[in-house]
Structures are given as C-alpha cells and as structure tokens.
Image (cartoon, rainbow, N blue to C red):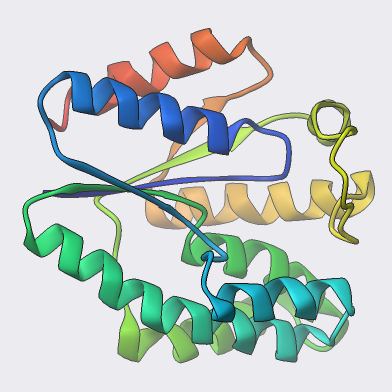
Length: 198
C-alpha cells in the first residue's frame, strides 16, 4: 500500500497526470484508488460553494477540513485493503491556498501553525508527494476554457501560492517536477521517481 499525492497550482496537469499514474500502476498489477479534494460528496460541494460565494479564508479552511476529515477515513480504508491511493490535491493545497489568503490576518508561519493545528488530530501523511510547478501564466492558459472560473485563478495570486508550495516542498521533502514540459515528459519524470519507491 502507498499513499501518493499530486499538488500544484491550477493548470499544472495534476488531474491528467493522476489518471495516467492510475493507468500505469494498474497495468503493473496494482490495485489503485484514485480520489481528489475537494471530494465529490456533499461536503466537497460545500467547499466549492464556499469558494464560489467567496466566504472568508477561515470559513473556507474549516470547510476544507470538514471534507478532509471524512476523506482521511475513506483513504485509510483503501490503504487497509492494500491498495495504492492517488489523491489529486490534499492537505498541502489548504496550506498553500488558504495559507496565502490568511496572510491578510497573520504572517505565514502563524497561518501555517493554525492550519496544522486543525489538521493534527486527523493527520494522515502521504508516502510520496509530487509538487508540479509551472509559470502561473502558462497554468492559466491551460485552464482558460473552464466553464467556471474561481477567484483563485489569477496570476498574481497563483504566484504567491506557488511560492508557498515551494516553501512547503523544502519543509516536507516533496519531489518537485517541472510541469511546463509536455505532459508525457512530465509523466516520465514522475514515473522515474515512483519506481524507486515501488
């Protein structure tokens, strides 16, 4: 069993790469559970609604944690069955996105300390985290055809989020992968790193 997380700003290819990873691992004979945050449950929809309605960062963060509290239990069940779990976004998205938003109220370290404190009782650490990086402008160009735009999808904001991700990568030891490259090349880089852990 292994818990793999893909993180990064919008437009870095996380969702496509998560599916490619699932297909690859299943072709190798592994049982795989692919999931995402926010989840597709009513709790996940509450998160999306909170974002759409531009609730304050504390409210948004707490909605994410409500969704995650249930999600962690689901992930544990699949890990307990010996499956590999691949998650498109997890706790580090909250640290990065809400951490930047909370900077209106407190400094970075205080924001992260507050978020980490909420997560501590439900904490589940991934075995492997891939941080996909891309220039915010390139990322936004990849998602320009999305039907619904979020307030997070602004170049200046995404640059701050990516900076926060890079800080977290150094703190937690993520594998940083340049996703400015074509998707197939990015996937090969992920696969090369993953094979050392299988």
